[in-house]
Each structure stands twice: as structure tokens, then as C-alpha cells.
Image (cartoon, rainbow, N blue to C red; front, side):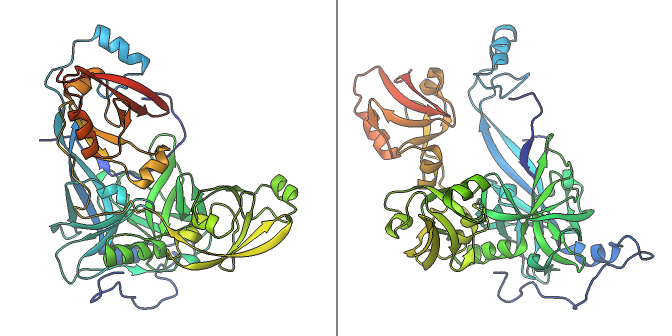
Length: 484
């Protein structure tokens, strides 16, 4: 744990509580009476949001989740201290020993926000609000509560679609984020820190904002006060239309500091349509690594403007390689549309259906060249309701392992391996940790749980087995005593 304050991007996480034991076809979000603006000005000055809140607030919901957490607390006085933290050794030597009994289980509860998009009970929220939850409850402003089904989530855009069993519900009206202007007023309604249906207001600070690690979302930046618990709540314009889904804040403390970010509602509704139709989200993929075109690079490439995206590397066998792209190409246009910056390209490609033939204009050897290629598909990390694989039982080493997806392998930069989901017994004594990746057993690479079990069975009378572990940026051998 880092005890020094640092600037960080924080998802507007659902507020933690104390631990204890395309919209529906028959009722889409319908436009309401067309008005230039729903919000009047008070004496020609500041806007009055009361009518907007009275009219739209009933469609905003409170979301609470319950998750069973299983973890090993090292010290009751100060749990979850990493073993490589210098303070860990101090507590190990001078504090009372931890209670025995292995991993403990407890119920974690959290809160978030959402809004109803169809009269028959479809609700939008953030993926991180309901991620890995065992139970999701939706509470309406009239105090009714419903157990929600998670239709699907998309972690890359942080959008989730829920369904509750109810009819004739109030719904929001959807707006067009493309028509918004920087400087116009916007309103957020949600449940910050569990305070239901709280209203905050501000202005649009910027549009098309790119954030680290979010390649598929062009965020709306506002100065609306958004805090933990606002996650998944709506961002309204002055016409009472939802233009965004509140998702992240930029903060030194984890709380509001004047910068909040919302997912444009048109992008969210595209994700919702795919989740509702197939339970997953499909995205086009080129298979390239790109970087920004700076003024100096533009000059060195002979470009007039610092626009586009430079291809720094190309994956073997990727759509880009098959289509004739080369490292050093600058992608200027995609399907006839200019690529203003490298951050825009993943969104443009991702929004295109996999398998589509596309035209890409590149700058090569100081000359523009048009290429035609067929897009591949991103490996999905969409989680449909109850579709996430359940953990396997612990093996005789005390390891509960899970297989890595193609996306996991790319992000971890490994060709093979198994994720340690839970650890106990001999493996725990040997120092294996939850979150480690087992690369090999006894010198043989592992890629599936079944293969690991077979290799373990072959050890016969061996008393110890060597596991090759990746932990963060480190790779190390860990000897584990069989049956120990």
C-alpha cells in the first residue's frame, strides 16, 4: 500500500459499506414533448433545475450489490499489507501472530447508481458497479426493490445492462452528445456515498477526452460533483435528456476534485444493443501498436500537420499485416474519416464490425497510399449473466487455478500460464500468492487446468515440485512440498 498521496484515475466506485455476515422492443426509451430547453432561467440568471429533477428523477435508481469475498488476512490490526512492503516485516516481528484457520469469507456490500431505459425494466449502469457481484438489487424512488439479472457487462467501456421484473416504469429520454457544446450546463443524479437521488450540476468542461487505459471511450469531461456511489448514474442536458453515463473521476484522494468523466450515451446504447442481442460486444481489430504523431515526428515524416497514428509494430498474421501495413506507416484516414489523433483510432476501428472490408489511408515514404484490408475481432471480455466460469476445486498443492484468455495473455505478455485464483495448504506455505501466474510445473509449460493436473499426477514419489511463477514484472521458481 502506498501511503503517499498520488494523482490517480479512479473509477467512481460503488460506495463500500461495513462487511456483514437496444432497449426493450416493446417499450424503448420514448422521447418526451419536444422543447428547446426544459430548464428555465431564474430572473435571467442561473438555471433552475427543479422541473428537470421532478420530471426525470423517478427513472434514476439506486443499485446495491453483494459479493462473497474470500481472502487471507495477514494481521487483524492492519490487514492486506503486501509481504514485500517494509512495514510487513515490522508487524510480523512485533505484533501478535495472526489468527489461524486459513482464508476467511465475508459478504462485501456496495452501492452505485443507474437509470431505466425501458418501461419493462432494462437498466443501464457501470460494469464496475456489478462486476463479480453475487446479487444485484435495484431500488426505485418509490422504495420498491427488485432483484436484477445482469444481462451483460462490457469492461472495456464500463457499461452494464440489467433487467428487473417490472412494468410501466418511468424511463429517461435520450439525447445526442454530439450536439453538446463545451460550457453548457449539465446535471447528474445518483447516490454518492449512498445518499439516494442526490442532484449536482455543472458545465461540460471538454468533449472527446481520452483517458489512460480507456481506448474505446471518448469521454465527456464535466465539473459536476461526482463521487463514489454516482457510478452508472445519468448525466442530463438542460432539455432533460441523458447525454452520458457517469463513470470516472480524476482525483488525488479518491473523491471529487472538479474533474469527472461520463461515457457518451450513444456509445453506451450501442453497447446495450449488442449485450441485449447476443450477450457480448464485437469490435473490429487491426493488430497494430500505435503512437501519437508529435510536431517533431510530423516534420521528420514530411507531414504538414501533427495528425494521425504512427504504426510502431504489427502483430504477425494480423489483419494489418495481411492488408499490407508496415511499421512506420502513419494512418491518416479510416474509412474516409480523418484520424485526428492516435487515441481516436482504436475507437474508430472498434466501432466497425469484425470481418468488414475497410479502406485505410496511410502515409508512407512521404506519399499517401490507400490500403484495403479485412478487420479481425477483439477477444471479448464481456461477461454475461452467470457466464463467468466458476473456480475449479483446489488441487493437492492447495491451488485453485483458472485458464487465461487471449486478452489476459496479451496484457500479461505471456504465451501460456494459469492464474492463481485462491491459494492454501502447501502452496500457501511455500509463498505462492493469489494473482500469481503459474507458467510451468516441473520444467513443463502449462496452459490448461487439466494439463496441470496430469503433470502433477506424474510427479509420483517426488516430495517437492518446482513452480515457475510470474508475479508482476518478476519471474521466479517456487519449490512446493507435495502434501506439505
